[in-house]
Length: 449
Image (cartoon, rainbow, N blue to C red; front, side):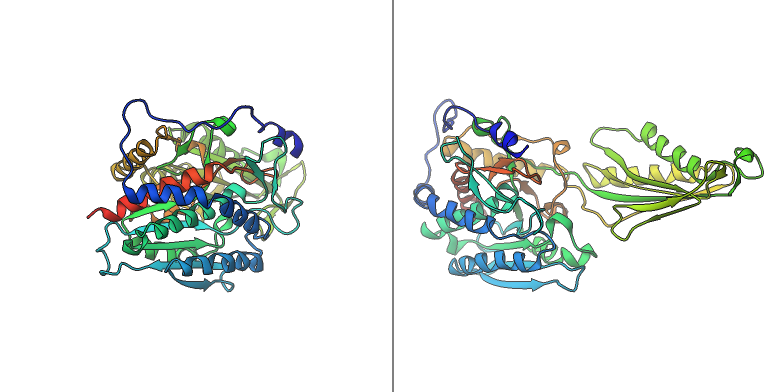
C-alpha cells in the first residue's frame, strides 16, 4: 500500500519557476541577498530535515519532542533569539513549548510589525509505528522525500529556520521583532487548553502578524499549484447522553414506559442530520452505545453496552464533532443542537456537552490584506500568485488560538501530501521557495510602521 501511494507521486517533468506575465518588480538588495543565501544553504536545510525526521517525536513521546527541541534551540540562539523551554509534563503528559524571542534593539514595537511564528515539533506517529525513517522516494530524482513529519511539519520548521538564517545573513534580522512558539502537542493538545496554549496566546497579544509554518498542500503533485490558507475550521467534540424508562418491550411508545433512551438518541442525531446543514459546517457522529448499560472507556475511543432484544433500553450515548468556519457559526450551531436535544420524546431525557476545542480562524479583511502582501512578494520573486485553499478542505490548527488577536497566514511551511498517513511526503524543492517567500515577507513587514 505504501509503495502504491509513493508511486502515485512520481510525476514526470521538472518543476518550473513560474513567472507572472508582464514586468516584474525588482527585489531590494537585501531581498536578493536572502534569495542567494537560501539557495546556497539548501543542501544543509535538507540535511537538517533528515535529522529532525529521524527523531521520533509522536505527541506522547516526551523524550522525542525534547530531542527535537534540543536540535532547534541552539540554532535559534545562534540567530540572536532568547530561548526558553516551558515543560508541561504535568499537564496531561505533554512535552511543552519552545518559546523564542528576538527583541527589537530600539524597543518594543519600533521594528515594524511584531511577528509571531508558530508551529509544532510533534507528529502523529508514535514509537510503535512502522513509519520511522527519512528516505528519498525512488524515481523522483531526489526531489521527494518520505518520512514521519516530513511535511507536517518538520519541513516547516526547516523553512522557518532557513528564512531566519537568510535574514541574519542579509543583516536585516537584527532590526526585526519576532516571537516563536513551537508546541509539543499540536496533534493532540493538552487540557486545559487555557494552559497548554497560554504561551501562544500571550505572544499573540504582543504581536501584529502570525505566520503558521504548517505544511502547505500542492495540488497535482510535484508540478502542481502552490497554495496558502487564510482561514481554518474549528474542531469541537460533543457528547450526547440520553435516558428513559426500562421495561418490557411490548410497552414501548406508551404512556407508561415511553420511547426509551435509544429512540431518543436516534431522534436527536437524525434531527442534527436534517436540520443543521449550512455552508461551512460539518458534523459527525463517531461512536454510539446504548442498552441496559452503556459506558465509554477512559480514552473515549471504545466502550461497552449490554441489553436484550425484549427490554426497553434506559441509557444511550453518542460522541461526535462539529467543524465551523467562524466563532459566530460555532455559537449558533451549538444553540441549535441544544434546542434539538431539549425536545424530548415521551418519558425520556437528554443532555449534550461540548469539550474544549480548537476554535475557528475566520477569514477577515486583515488576513486578506496580509495575503495581498504575500502575493506582492510572489510577484517580486517571479512566482505565480498562490491559490487560497478553501477552509473546508483542511482541519483545525494552533493558529486559531491566536486568530482573535492577529491576522495570519496558514500553511507557509514545506509543501507535500499524505500528512498523518504512512507514506507522507515532502517536495524538497518547495522548501527553498517557501523560505524565500517568508524571508522577503518578514523583511518587508519589519519595515512597516
